[in-house]
Image (cartoon, rainbow, N blue to C red):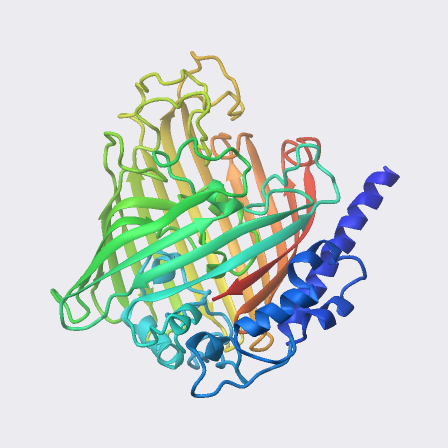
Length: 541
């Protein structure tokens, strides 16, 4: 026990040093000064890549600059585009939000979308904002400088935007689970390990909300540990073992058109793969307020859909959504039965209150059972190896009905509250055991009725333009065990910070406590509670 505690403490000291190094770099210090700020010895393994004096001289010479590393260098009119972007006295200031918004709570990229909005109102997350919300964001968007990559490529005035981020994280679990997993804590599920979560790139040409027909597109590329979770059945099914860092997922790819019909706001039509409109939290790390996500998102909701979605801007304050998809997290490579998704988003006239309600119905199972070696995450389907490859006679008669409602309110310029409630119902689910387990069960196990419910609350308080506090509370009910693998109720409390020392650097520490009501679910299914400490570092570009 003593050795285990010492090893855990050593890991914390090690990554604390890395944290100190990242902060020092963010404050404009050189590499040598940054190393002095970190604990001695922590960065020795990186010295061959970053700290050699000769390498530094070669890098300086390559940029045509005869200066020392770490010094701020002013750009001149004759400098190259790359040099102008990388070396300037004062980097462009972060755009400020309108008075109705919450300063500092914006996603990176050209659209500056508030993190406090429901997913259905965020184009960044697959939805569309109402005209009132879009107008509230318009001032910030107008002031936003071109993205880093657009400036480097000399495409400042191009309607096509290229941007992205890199996210890495570490989550400590004092319980030292032998299987190495923090149950319920996702996507930072690996206990006491460094994760390369998201190496994310976006290429888009956003629609113009005008009185003319216009077209757009978006392509999102997700590389890293999180690609395991965002996987859709039918694409790269067995390409990457789980868990695996160098995984890749085509997270979004769609074309869209703005049709100036029916009302002043017109209708937007989208076809391809897009993030779900359900719920509040989203897959992109920069689109959510904390490193980890709640149970309701990870176990209870879809991540993506393929299909058609229309957004009718019925009034300046009201969007109506209608579309069709073949279900949750699957490609249309099989003869699926197509279902429906729709709902509405409403924004108050002063843009302080947002309400969305989304409903979807589809065949939640698959026409054929998975082969034994096929990844089957997320849960809610027969486990891989249950009647492998055979026809699923329950498919056509099994329907998954799912409702989500999200309300957000800006109490002040500093304080925003978000609440979400979900309800899921599914009949005739094959391969789920009597207590919900999704391991080996008899092939003659009767099909099961599955239900799940959840409620979540978020408080986001803006201490300054650089620091935002986050408090998330959640309860997730899984009485049939069809979503988590155990008939259980789960509770979670998470406290965190969003710290932005630079416009392009996010550091998000969090403290999380989880507990279950009926059965041990944590630390190799031996404990009914779990405590984790984590943080991530995000660099946007």
